[in-house]
Amino acid sequence: MKSGMLSLRLMVLITDTEAYKKIHRLFSEERIPVYHQCRGQGTAKTELLDICGLSGSARLITAAIIPKVMTGRMFQRLEEVLQIWRKGRGIAVTIPITGLQECIRKLVDQELCEKWKKMEEGEELQMKKEASFSMVLVTVKEGYSDEVIDAATKAGAGGGSVIRGRRRGSEALVQFLGISLQEEQEILMIVVPKEKKGEIMSAVNARCGISTEARGMIISVPVEDMIGFETR
Image 1 (tube, one colour):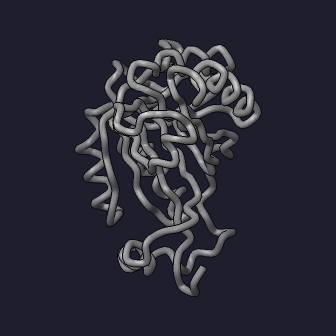
Image 2: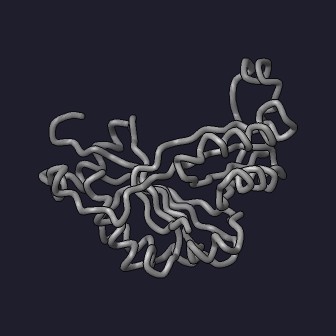
């Protein structure tokens, strides 16, 4: 990392759709310069919704770039503004960023570096709980998300969130995998305990993998810190 530049993280926040005004105000107050939002559909079972405090099925998914040292501060503000963790209003996770456009990094540094660059690693605000989770990302043909969730929950997952899109790629991918790139896709985000990640991915692959009618592609990414989710 260049001298004076912050170590960055992607914070993914999954909430009820009604929270968008509070999130916008919070991010403005904390001078978060760039974030993206989309709407999704929740798939969690009733008991998991009780744990997370999420009602209904509509979800607002927010992704923001923040400095690593700011994670504790942002989690505290999410508790204050959205009551995440204490009363349960959703889930927030942070994921390490390994690459970023220089112009975006400069923008983040310009807005946030002055306040945070002097904070040493040992001075970071302590997390409520050390994360021991991974996020499994699955893309399948439209209409197969229920099968993915069924396979994942039987292997130990609690549920997930779904957004819709379209798969794009090269002709080489079409020939190698024998899939269509123009068909509508469902993209699932499933937060799972690390110790169950392999079993869950294997179960989803067997049920909805690339060789099945669902044509699923499955990856996992590490979750560094997390609030809003408790296992029983």
